[in-house]
Image 1 (cartoon, rainbow, N blue to C red):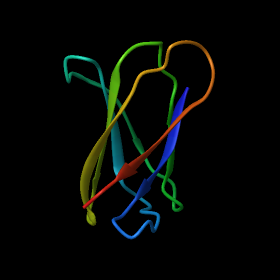
Image 2 (image 1 turned 135 degrees about the vertical axis):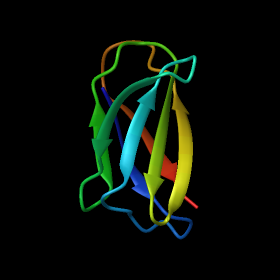
Image 3 (image 1 turned 90 degrees about the horizontal axis):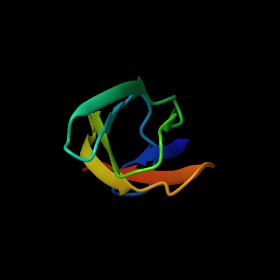
Length: 79
């Protein structure tokens, strides 16, 4: 599972952002809306993933590479 939080440049959480999960070739896989506190989660297989946040505060990307089962956390900074 990939989980995390969307934050702005000051570290404040960004709620309501659209968060997309992209595979290693940048193909769209899934999308969720971040909670009011900026939290999101995806169920994803091991491999290389890009997580992209789109919000009124800006956009940002983060790369996560889960190597096995478990919880993999990543924060996305938008600007």
